[in-house]
Image (cartoon, rainbow, N blue to C red; front, side):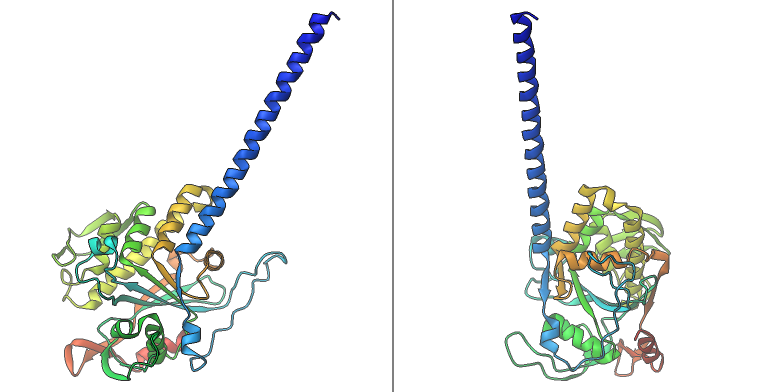
Length: 350
């Protein structure tokens, strides 16, 4: 072999070495960037979640907890996935704080009410669920509730159910629900106007079928009866509609809200989010950005664990009902629990 051939060979080896080194550095940089991005995304999503320490505020004088058992299939190295029954109070808040919420609803920005209240009962095994809506116009005995500033609220008789949130926030909402149901709320989840609309948009909208025309100037929604694919703003307007349907009561609005819940579950199940990281991040960001929970669900890992435990729950296995009520004797525009049907319903969820 000549000296020139040796030199050419050395140059080729040198080039390959440099190419491999550059490729290795590029790959290492990409991995570092990927890890850093993933770490930032997790921190961002985790930091989105706001929480309230309801357990500490209410203490031990509460209904008994449901028994939660770990999944037998959980690996020794992974956190066990819960399989016991669980009750979650889900509130939709009409907070107008922030530009996004103000753009999606009228009213002042000095306070908020719980316009939507649902007790979500998930059966042991996490294969079936029952969602019970509590009409906001229900007259109840509102118990004394602790306040963040110290002291407590007074007991109020014949108070509107949604006033509990107004006077004492999530803690009073949970205590009031437990008082009228005698069912322990294992968790609390609250989502505001903007968060609901963003979630619907992140999922690409929802498809609903209305059985009558909707013409509601208050919610700015006008729909002919039939099937519609709604964006986030339209879906929120549907959830708030009451004057454009039926007799204009809250019971008509509850029916629309329950329809929306089923539509959301169907839309979520139609996406294979685990195979689409971009869509998964968009949906998770929308959910966590406007979420307030109890301290048992105030981290991404805890929400993921709850989500994993519900993988076998389909939209068809979710039953939506409304707490049995009758017109209040004291006010034709209010309702009260219908007994013994209401008590029998709550007993079935223990």
